[in-house]
Length: 256
Ligand code: NAP
Figure 1 (tube, rainbow, N blue to C red):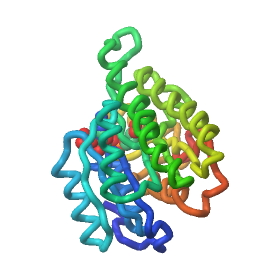
Figure 2: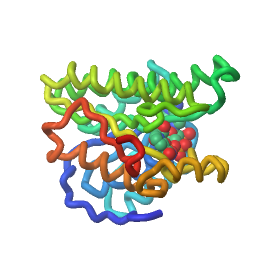
Figure 3: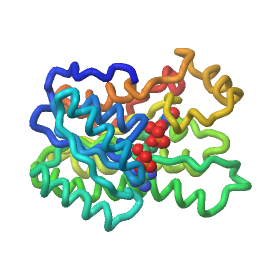
């Protein structure tokens, strides 16, 4: 794993951050970077408890603080209980990164209702659910940072990903609406749209698909989870206080 050192400047000291789907991939990298900047991090996962515990152990080994909390983000009632528990345990909630996401790829004409619903429920409704209950505490605090992980597929569309692209485009609309509603209370809401990133989500792609993807990336390669984590830390930091309702493309130039 690259750049896994606690080399931050401590600019998020005293902040509590929730990262959904932080047991691996991009969420894991974001959790590590937020912790490196001094944030107390809640590592959320759905099924991979051991891997989430490994992320916590890694953060502690590097001098940071973290806790592990299970929640299926697609479950509205479970999200309410989860975010209430975060506030109870940590006493505050400053940063929410809606990163949990899944794919169930297939051509439109063959896509099952189940695969469509599963992706929309986790990616889009999950993002809504967490904003819905995290915003309660942020409104009380009159401050907060919400960062939603969209995708280049939500910006450009992608054959074979009608469900996923719809969910990620929906996240952009949700981000902008939430940004408008919450701005007057000191809460910013932004999205990051990653391009192709080396994680378990993309490792199953065939060599042919990977080559086709690389051909569309001006910088000529897939990104790393740490590239997305850097953008998330920026949006969570004081330096981004005047930025809201934006989509930050971290995609090697795919969508410009
Ligand atoms: P990944 O390696 O497959 O990891 C997905 C994470 O989401 C895991 O921690 C998983 O937890 C969690 N998760 C899945 N369903 C969940 C649920 N219902 N409730 C709570 N957590 C859940 O994926 P990744 O590549 O890191 O992707 C992270 C985010 O970036 C996703 O939103 C994805 O759509 C987006 N993205 C990825 C790429 C890419 O190329 N990799 C590009 C653009 C956008 P468990 O381990 O417990 O299942």
